[in-house]
Image 1 (cartoon, rainbow, N blue to C red):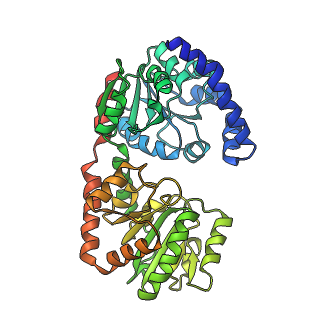
Image 2: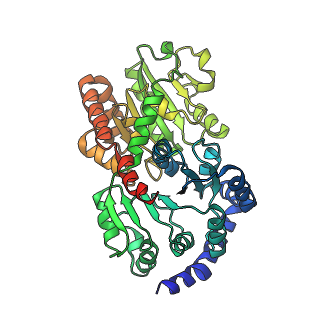
Image 3: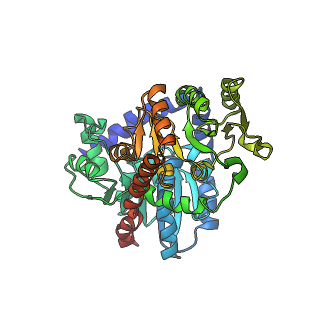
Length: 426
């Protein structure tokens, strides 16, 4: 049956996927970047392997995009610290991951993953010759996985996750995924519910175990580093109550901005630092248009000229985690659009985190709300009331923040537990 699925995938499913990608490339710039970035993939890869990949054990890490690669970083850092002869190969599916990470210093080779044909998988592995492969979270490409198995190369999934209602468990789709997952050696999951979901496939080969989520380790490490940075002057923050809104989309801002303007009437020392998920010039100007005549604002890049403005619009990227360190309360974006972004980046600082109704994609957002460190808001009314309570009741705010910080620290340690499995193959 596996050979039947290999045929169906390679000759029926893949051509459809490729046609969809090519069509999307006509309309979406990000997809076009991914197609163009793969144009000379094997030439670039061969050069990197020849010039940078010295002798030693080779570990291949694959991540879909930037967010997933952040989860790999604590593993890579600790692996390199312990084993100086280990060489690291990193691949990405998404251009956002590749373009932001192509200078990552702990990787010896960084590349796009080639499109998932049998020939490409064989050529990629012929060039890189990994001793072990690690897939981060979910981006499992069947032909690459099957080719690794053919060569006897161990495969692990780190931070593996699967919802109980996943479409991967539908009858025909379930059979296909059985033959994908059943060639993997170790599926190291985030939680016991993920383990249960993988066990429902009745897999016979993999070791399936809950070891936790390395994102907790990553935010713990990065927050410690961020606390040493001083990117906002003390005079800007003096006597302010600070709300940091991270990774906001227009749908979030439609709720957030009116609420802030209303709160500002009652609290004149309120400061909003808003960090758009996509700080394009067009979006920054749209945000400013919403604020003109209603409050004062300044862009982060002009902060040297700060004159007590009530809103700071961040027009830089890569500083959100550091900005959360200045917050009394954090709002996490994406939760009025499709899916909430990373709540841990704020919770690690011991501050209450808030998010909208679309947060079920995040197990930690759900759990924080259950514990009392996170707050789900449905509209401007509930957002206003929640913010008012947290800013006016210092004890309640501290209590919620302590819960959030404790939740993060209790879940640190997944990197060590994952490495116990990985190091068996080195």
